Image 1: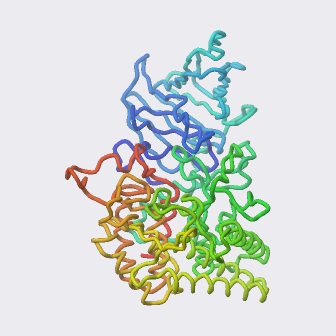
Image 2: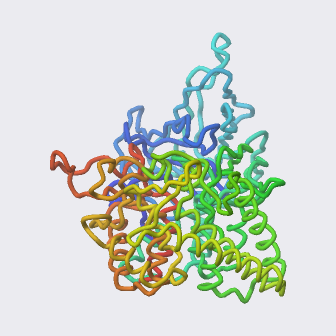
Image 3: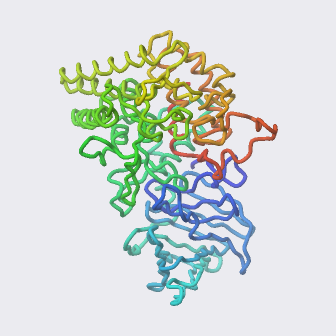
Length: 589
């Protein structure tokens, strides 16, 4: 029996993320605005769901709506009312199972123009959405009725309902098939409880990929693993847009597989190096002829090349080589890693250094992960210390991979490149207190309050000891970056600090992960552990949000912080991204 993870009377509700499983596009969630339950399909032309609530789910008794509570474990959602229950589980990623006892469960659908709804055969109702795909409601037992009727004037069905109810004192059951083009009902279905046990076993098997964490973090770790597990989507969903299994950030907010997020997911998989390598290379299925990879990918075959994401792959690769049991990796694994990462590294040197300085620059803020940071106030292109730290690690990873392949020439070349970039970072961009950025057009140095100027701490023991220690002291200074919840993304004294931005104030997951892992690696263990515990405890209290407010109270009014970590804010509550970071950091304590 799995632990209860979310629920009406629990610390966290399904307003934060939907009830779902690995590979499933169909989910159930609770609206943060009207508190009703809805089906959601995590397909969209945009990164945010354009239509998160196409079908409302309503518990009823004798024609009246019922108040309800709910709770879910990793494989079953139970909705309880005064008169009975409705249970949700999955028989497979594309088949949701529903069982009702004592009540009617209504599915209320208001179609858009050109959408479809038809009882195509007795006991089978198909709903066809624009872009979202199709759902087939299949009767199994009890009663299933519907009011579907075509409205020729609106070129769509009239709004209609599907009702599922028990037969007498027994239960009523349906299956819902989800597909993109065409599908058929099964000739038979396994028992509901068997479907639940099968799904729960799949989750428990997936948990084996992660190491133990201290006891105080175990309940949240189970939630974290579940968030990542349910966010894993792949090509078997019916579309060819995803060429391999990737981890979406969320199934309601930012429904895409983002590049560098796959690195953090790989870094958390400490007990499965093989899967970590596969996941690390997910976005490289879309690598272009020049070596670049997209910012993100989706199941609708949308690959965003407007920019790329931070080149974290070298850091992640070295982290895995240093911390994972890699004895199961093969020559083919190392060959794939080397070929793809070396092309990617060359792409950065060729396509992000048109001024021929010898060192890559940012051409777009999204390439840094600091989308609206003060780092870019001076303009673009800009040589930034965080980017050069990424490049140092990319070159080192290429060298170590070449060494694994007994390619001495390339191993020496890439290590020389890593050293060359590191020397430039330390000797040209360090001013004795922090790293500076450099504007490529003018050659002038640029300083700001963004923690991006200190993120090169991720290099750990590769940095001179005095530089890392200086950064550690600044990071741990409550007058600069240290908050009760971790490291702020903008200096706390900065006039540009904005707690409801993304990376200009809040305590953000990737920033804390990279700096803290670097401090651990470089021997600044006491500072790293103190801040890490603060950050992990913040996530225990706030949930696995991408961003946490750096303040307990509103700075101007003194009021309690509100709506920081809900679906109404940029914090993106319970993201798979923050979940994997929680798992990686908790294993360090």
